[in-house]
Image (cartoon, rainbow, N blue to C red; front, top):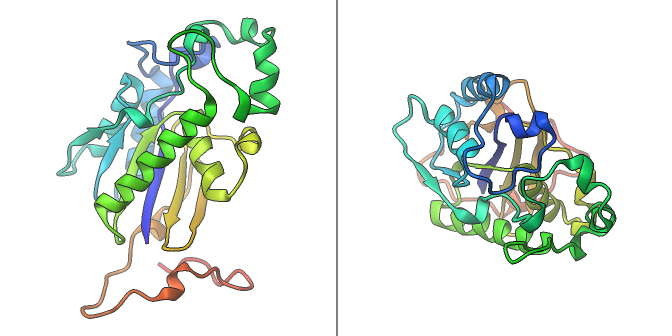
Length: 234
């Protein structure tokens, strides 16, 4: 199975300032955000990564760069992992946006939400492009790969909703904090969501076990463990 680690970028001044950054250029990590990505990079250091793929926005590229330190890899960028295109909402304070009629749609019926202006997109479009990107990278990297996708809160929530089999209208129930790790393993028949909004703790269970020569992948890898199982073995 292919495992993707979904990493949200570290905290930014837009996050603390209550501004919807969107695709605004030049939004970097603040001091806390830099500390967060240093910490998450240290946590993920034991995990062998087949690739690190980032949103093209600066805050994600800086986060990905921290994870890549000491690894013989380069960041690949994929616009499909970029932030939701909030259109005319971009750069506006959240305290103003909550007064807009569209805000209630985004909260209660996000599959119908389309952001205003020529640059705006629907959240359904955001989900479709992000899920497509993840699945295409899965296919490219192969069934034994563990790779990292560095993206944004709403984008990661949309990917997780798809993996959980939830309608997009339920994705606001998912929380994805800055520099948090969420993990999904994709098998032939279904995804397994291993972690959501994980901001601390051991990651040894994400290190794939050595594969014995000649061992064929079992169909049971796609089966859920009845009763819940004993958990990951280290």
